[in-house]
Image 1 (cartoon, one colour):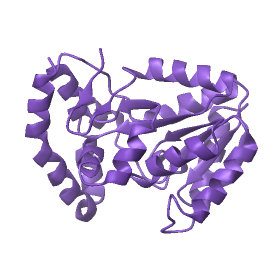
Image 2 (tube, one colour):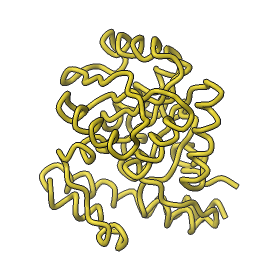
Image 3 (tube, helix red, strand yellow):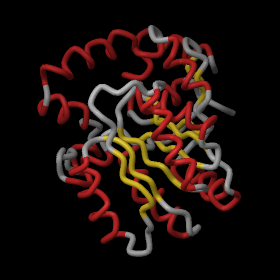
Image 4 (cartoon, helix red, strand yellow):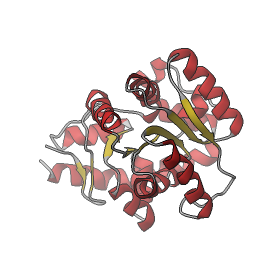
Length: 248
């Protein structure tokens, strides 16, 4: 039984973090690549108007739910899934890479953030091996020549875990291309996960997350950017509720 967003035909493939990590571990051991995306309401708004983003999402091997509204929608559909935020997956993913003796590539953000994140992760997972830290130039095209050169670097690493921190839709589009150009790499789209680890962004405290108010915390940090985004997300919720009920 799978929960799908019928307006975009995107399916949540793994119910919880445990199933996700199990799949990742199997693929890393076998040297089979993957693309992992964490869908949220903002992604749904973008998917409705961005054909390239929708095409990239269709190539994701693993899709999990990052956002309490989508978890609530899954319960409304009687096909419940768990909350699996990308930021919460970073450390388990790195631990899995270390356990399977696969190197890690950090891709995205800035050189300083990548260095800080690598330093922090090394303290938490001492046996992790970092093969590359790649910060693309500002405004780079995730399907252009610069992206292809980056993916060639990843391909040369061989079987590995590549944490992609570019934000949507760039990270998903790049990961989809990576499935073709670096097929042994596992691409995991983690959004602000690198910046949280580096300390460049401050994540909401645990008690705020438990109250399902992380969105409000983030909005207060950057209201000019996020108020319009969350308004657009709220606007599609009634339609998504109707679609969820139809799945019963």
